[in-house]
Amino acid sequence: MKNQSIEGIDVHCHVGAGARATGAVGELLKKLKEANVAKCVVSPIQLKEYNFETFTYAEQNDAVASLAKTYPEKIIPFARINPGAGEAALDEAKRAFTKLNAVGIKLQPSVDGYSLSNYTLLQVLEEAEKYNTVVLIHTGLNRIDAVAHPLACIDLARQFKGVKFILAHAASLLQDAYEQGNLLPNVWFETSIHSTPFTISNYVKKYGDSRLLFGSDYPYSDPFIERLKIERAGLSESSKRKILLENTERLFEK
Ligand SMILES: [Zn+2]
Image 1 (spheres, rainbow, N blue to C red):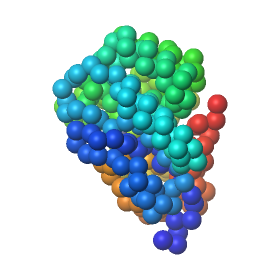
Image 2 (image 1 turned 180 degrees about the vertical axis):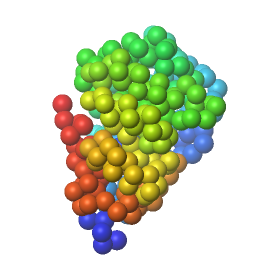
Image 3 (image 1 turned 90 degrees about the vertical axis):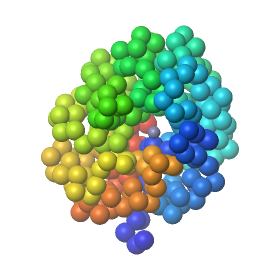
């Protein structure tokens, strides 16, 4: 497509055989090419369906780390941390930061089954602060997602100012989260699933273009379609460039 000339970065992709979907690296790379996306953040997919087990995702984090070695130009590795696993999760976070070269971590409190006041989570975030790590966190507003309410994520960002938080799924379009998040220097919003060209356009008019990041949540959505929302939001070339690429590049600068 002619107006998709900016080579983007997708900040939200998953690989692995999961409970609800499978993310395959071959398919992911093909889809990224279709969407003119040069690089993507990859973390392990949700393994089980809401069973609140206490596994650490260590094996899956290893798999992502090795993919990043195979495709160093394409894949930015994030580890998935499940604080429900207690001390083992803290060890896994330390291992991710020191041994796996994880650029960030992915948190999915609702399906992995822990609250944002989980003590291990707070310890993990202290570690993340030490390593200047990015945290991509799922947000939602439905009953299951109550533990990942966008405003609770904003509270965490207020508490851990040294951690860069990306609120996934456009913070479920919650205006209060945009109002509050834009007052904090360490909060960004990723566009997948909930946003539309209309909501992206409105967001940029109200809050500017420096906190939005393109993401697809592959395999739950498709990078081409998620990118199209940004392309069709009536933005200036420079705003598109920031959302598709430059904001993410800046965020990952250490
Ligand atoms: Zn995700």
